[in-house]
Length: 182
Image 1 (cartoon, one colour):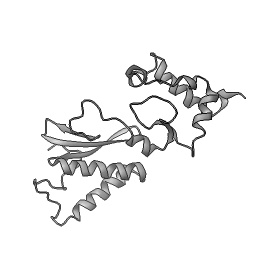
Image 2 (cartoon, helix red, strand yellow; image 1 turned 90 degrees about the vertical axis):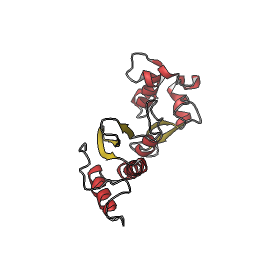
Image 3 (spheres, rainbow, N blue to C red; image 1 turned 30 degrees about the vertical axis):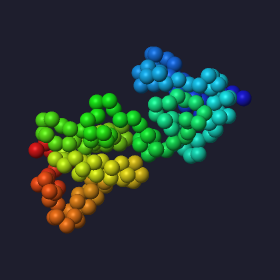
Image 4 (cartoon, rainbow, N blue to C red; image 1 turned 90 degrees about the horizontal axis):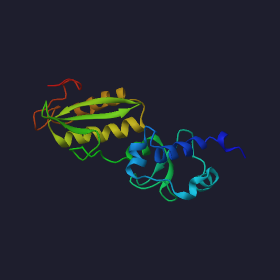
């Protein structure tokens, strides 16, 4: 069989390049951090036999434990949503939640989410809990819903429906534009 024409072959090559080739742009996040490919997956046929075909188009190779190696039992085919939620928190993260960071210039929590290779700003919040709720809601809506623009509009509608008329205990109002720096 001619493997180089197999649709999964590219995933296998990319996996090995990330882990084994210091000239690969992603090496610093994989091989540079000690992530390895198990020796039995040195041939494509063995890799394909262990991993199998993805269940649907658009699924990509994912390590169940992001700190673990590429090896049987730690690799699966995952959807975009699963991939996005199965990542490590950055070392410089101050909040403990992806997409929520303290912005010193405004003394507020800045919330963002990455969607279609773009960073979508979701606003600045004085209240940490509110910032976390906005981020978690965005994850659910954007990664399993239609678009970030609809999410932002629906979030504003949901916040307006809160009995406190859109004012939070810290005095924050939802009427402020989400991208402005107060």
